[in-house]
Image (cartoon, rainbow, N blue to C red; front, side, top):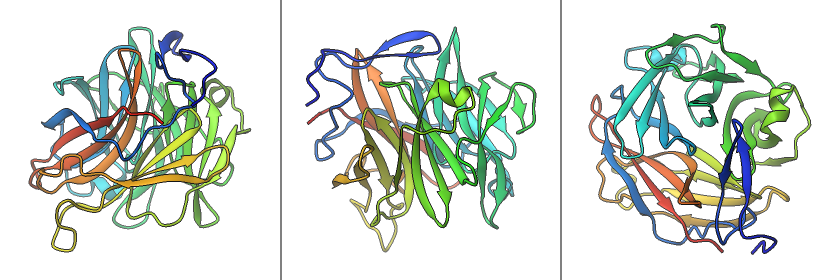
Length: 309
């Protein structure tokens, strides 16, 4: 364990957030430990599959993103962003037109609300569209925005990158950007404020490890990156499914643990979708999302792990 201190703090949106009492951001989560349910089969604003989510730990909100209702939305990169209570009650929504697929998002608390970090400037590949820039914008319930709307700031921290998404580590105040370049995916880590100031110098930059299944999301806590992969239940993937979580050391790019998760194994459909770090009572939780339900009436569930090694 990283035994230098009893707590780690970070400033996100000018507010201190205690990362963990009795652990540090150098600790890593035990992926073999059991998971606990946070929300179970909750409806989002639209009825499509959950793509990813993130926590506003300062204000006690969950933000989710999904492909917007309507034919052609996936190919055009149209997304629905929903704000939820920690119990899963819908508190507001936005539409993000032409932003991408929503593979992962980040939240930056600010004042009484929050800024969202997402992919944007979507480029279609046929059935889907993927963002080629990062965007920062304030949550404003009921608003519909495009990549060039007022209040949307776009960033390109890695020159020549495509299929860009991001997550924010609340324990360090760093932004982790997943991107494709020269045919492979990588993860670049930047101080959040440095990205906002235009920096292109990462703290870490590591390759995505080989051997993953269908990629579904990621999160970072301290020196470790967590990756989610797997598929929905089906004839070739019966329960308990093929959903795995993998831990990567951001300092070396080394894969240090990989484990099958049976969280929510009783769900129908059960497609893994998104990861995030929640801070609850001063302690970190590694969370993963699961989509369930019939087409046209999808539901979202979130589970978390707390055990550290």
